[in-house]
Length: 228
Image (cartoon, rainbow, N blue to C red; front, top):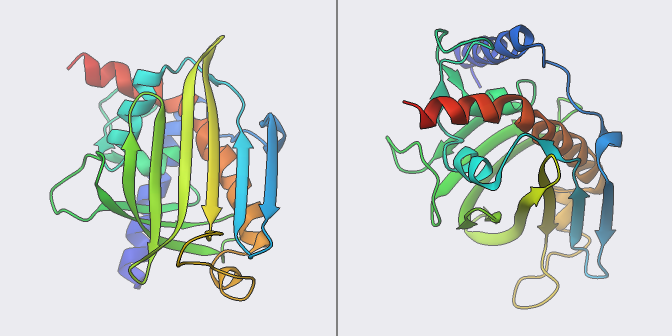
């Protein structure tokens, strides 16, 4: 990433942080807010990371689906009203770690089943950069799931399931890297090259932070979108 790109990324992240600061919601939820987490490494070297998140307050399944569908989009929300500069939804979701969420079809800023997206982010030690190509396999008011591809092969899957509960939305996230059956088996040697147990620990914190941010930004943005 060149100096100009880094300067632009810094500017866009600060715009998102400024909006969150005005709204009084810049702090992330801690890892301890999750109801439970688990990391399991299979005998073939595959890894599965599970998180049962804290309730996402004030968010409905319809709102969550809308958010995932519009994650590549932008907003003029400045933390108070909608008179601010253009800010990426993706940066509002995690202003520190997120870099870019880009659909493979130019001019398309909406995710549907079958949409392929490039995800760029860095986890919490600032050195663990994640660059992945993913394809959505399901997106509705119960689930958002996508397959992860590397070198033209499917190497993993991330599943998000959600539904109404008292006070908001229950939310579960699961990442599986490597498959224990079929022609593709990523073993103990190959899988750690791009997703180690340390990466899993970093992803847990990152995922709890971005999911916790949902209740702070989605209701206002969804209401604005529905009233336009």
